Length: 246
Image (cartoon, rainbow, N blue to C red; front, side, top):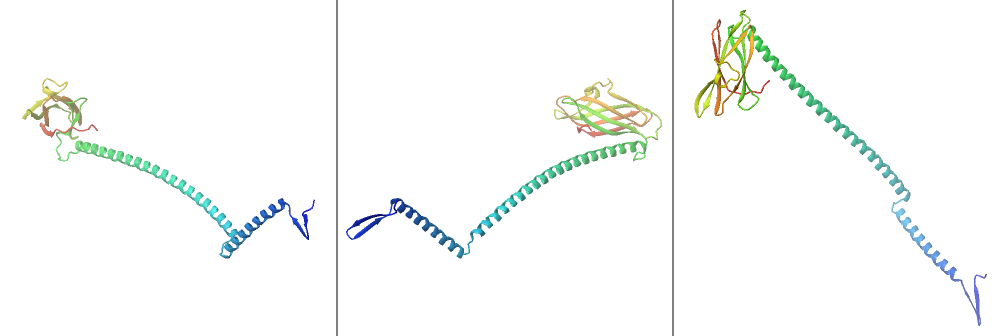
């Protein structure tokens, strides 16, 4: 097939190209122009200090840096979580130590009280070896207006004889805005008819007496009188103060 066709018109010969060649030439021209423009663009960027290779290398370095920072961030998060866990463990350990310390302090205080108690038996501070009330407490009862009177009687170890006798209790307070006094027959539960609490001991004895305060009566103080056939009587007055049982 001939590439060109010829047409004679007088003295002139007119040749023409096929249509597909024209289209191919147009497309090639456009592609060439685009490549030329891109080449000019890249050459301009190169002249301006820009390098495609350097840009690719820079992106690789930045990607590697991002991955490294992400790894460091994960490690830091793990360290923070570990530090938080350690702090919580330390906090619990400190709380346990404080609780144990408080328990030990309470035990030391209790032992000191016991030591003082037994010292009072062995060698009284005032040097007198007679009968005495070593301790007195008002404790809450099982219901309202119910209380327990607890007292500890002691005598010095210098006294070899067994102490026997009785304790009388009188609660002083206010009723209808007037001073009033109540004895064990009035308020004592399981109290004897004479209102006396008997005792018998050589060195010390704990005594507890349950009482019920009538409605409308406001206790203010408790007076104890300890009587023995061989020792002088002891009379002590204590303010009414309800304490937690220890």
